[in-house]
Structures are given as structure tokens and as C-alpha cells.
Image 1 (spheres, rainbow, N blue to C red):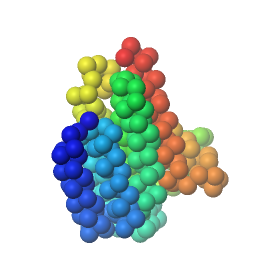
Image 2: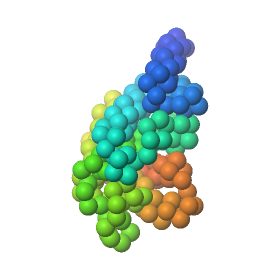
Image 3: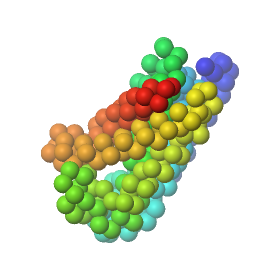
Image 4: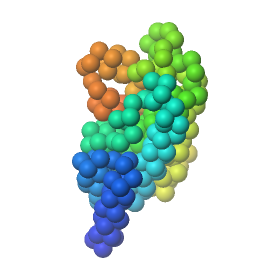
Length: 240
């Protein structure tokens, strides 16, 4: 846990980042405020490493969303409203992480570090798979029946999208390694949890979201929670 002075300094830094995100139109007002509160919780509950992992997710998410954005809008793969993220998106991508950090803080077990970073790996992998898969995955198929669908369709998957999902999950691994002595097991668990979580996101999107039972934010939360649980189970199964 961070010292009071470090937490204060970190909170000021988080507040500054929230202002920058607002000024850059990466987040709207409520989204920026929610991100600041979430960032402070991450620092308080988990220290610097989960916070840095979520920072990387935020930066990658903004970059991936803006990449060839006008082309994605023109081709009907995205809408202009997706350029600026709101509070629902912040909570959908970060709330499961907070849940796992609370449990880790209580139990002090590595399995919940695996869950925490697997949840982050899920949302990071999902963002890369979704935003870049729209551009490079020319022939996506619905995950439930493998029928061709339009890029950007909920539940659509493609080989490039799966590759980006794997890369996105792997990018989170280095932030977890300083927190455990089981480095190889932790890395494997996060990659597995994140990759499976991304595909569970697609499955939920193809079924519940396409029927209006969930929206994008609740789908993200559910998938990141499940991805975290898969990462924790993988860590245990591998002997962690």
C-alpha cells in the first residue's frame, strides 16, 4: 500500500490526467470524474502497478479508437459518439478490477493479483480486438455460428481480431510480475484469462447484447469479471 504522501501525490497526478483526458475529448465530464475516482481507488487498493496497467489500457484504448476513426465511421463500423467515452464506459472497464483489488487487499493472495490483471487484460485485449479488428478483420464471423457478419457487429470475430486480443492481454503481463514470485505462472494466467475474457465478451455480445439484455458497458463489466475469474482459476490450476 502506498504511504499517505505517495497517495496524495498520486491523487494529484490522477486529477491532472483526468483534466487532460477531458481537454483532449477522450472522456466527457462525468467520464473524466469517474476515471479520477477510479484511479484513486486503484492507487489506494493496489498501489502503482494496477494503476499503471490501467493507464496503459486507457492510452492504448484512446489510440486504437482514434486510429482511422473517420474511415470506421464512414464505413459504418463505428459512430461519432464512440470517440468520447463516458462514465458508463469507465465503470464497465474498471469496476471488476476494483472488485478483485478489494478481495486481494483482504486476502493478500496472489490468485487475486492474477484475477485483477486478467480483468485489465480482458478490457485491453477487447479494445484492441474491437477497434483494430474493424480495420484489419475484413471478414469477421459471428462467434456463435461462424456466419459472416459486418465488421463492428456485436459478437463478430476474425483472425486479426483474435491476434490483437492476444497482444492486448500480453501487454498487461509486465505490470503484474513485480507483485509475485510465481512470475511464469502469473504471466500465463493473465494471457489465458485476458484472451478467454475477450472471447466471452464476444459471446455475450452475440447473445445477450444483440437481444438488448445487456449494453456495451454491462457486457464489458461481465466479460472482465469472468476474464478475471478465468485468470485466477488458471493460476491455481498451474500450481500458483
